[in-house]
Image (cartoon, rainbow, N blue to C red; front, side, top):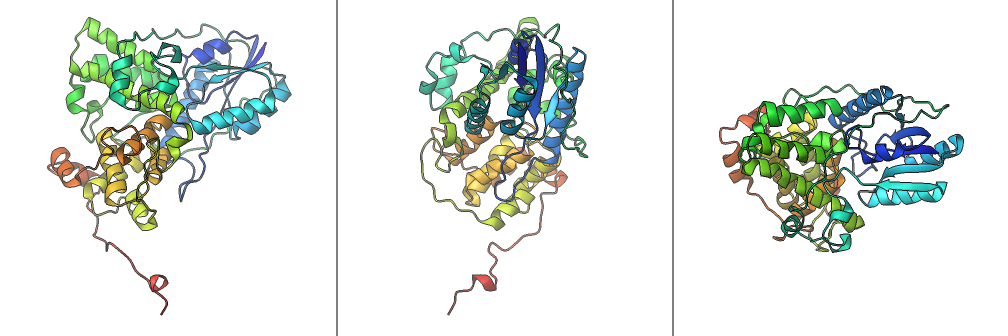
Length: 432
């Protein structure tokens, strides 16, 4: 049996069901495609920090595979092009990959399946629960988070799977070269996170057990910065360098061995939000990317290129929003509270279609995850899973609450010169 393992995330050895399934083969080729998102507006490619973090993640995973006698083939081609070529050239018998997470991944998988016409094994993604564990048919998933949480939080999360002790030999003749573009970015001093499985496991140990910052997580999670205020595990979860089940198991161990409180529960609570958006993205399909969303709610939105550009560059009349946008571009990170404030500003104060902001976050966030990103943007816009029909944050009040002394705004250069609300030039004048 000659197997091709097509990884789209899940770049880890621990708790990796796709890797363990592929290990049942006689010969194995492990490959991935460097992401190349479709251009949207003036956005193209991925941002410097997301690029760096992913490249580091792949380099570490490649090294870990080499120690097991394997390698990682990284191609800049689309999977629709690369996989049929590899299947034909190396006489592949079957393909192992994870089930598609959203509409575009589903369409891509269908294209590949039609092109190669061999056996496919679709394995679960990096989730807490298997689809078979859900207490409802997937098509009947609750539309809102709270009913979903109440139905699933009592389900026992299975223990993470062990690392493979061995892997089948590499398929000969494959060029295990790295076609990932080079990067020059370095981690920002405010968030010095490196990609890869070892760094992920080290962060789990340090944040939960060594520093015990988990004990105050619920009180600190709405801060705008400060590494100990957040778990900061999302970038590794998003790239699949860290297993959600492993995180849940470590939280449970901490509760057994040391202490449990509302904050330790809140880490699981946040993982359930991630779980909710994952399953909703599959069910919502292309509605996840349409302006009226899963709620099919029409809104009076527009695309004002000037307003959108000011928001992207952190040049609005809202110092806190400016600081948040500078933080995002320079560090690849923004806190959960910051994301809500920035999204609310673009949608409700500047009147711009939410999808442009979601695409900008997709480009720059190290922890970009399709379900969480687009699901949360729809939530704020009022076209998704928010029972209240959207969230409009008062930016002045948010500033008073989360940056009362202006330290964060000053640190991230949020005080910018005022600009006129509208700019009129000759091209805008009516013809007399």
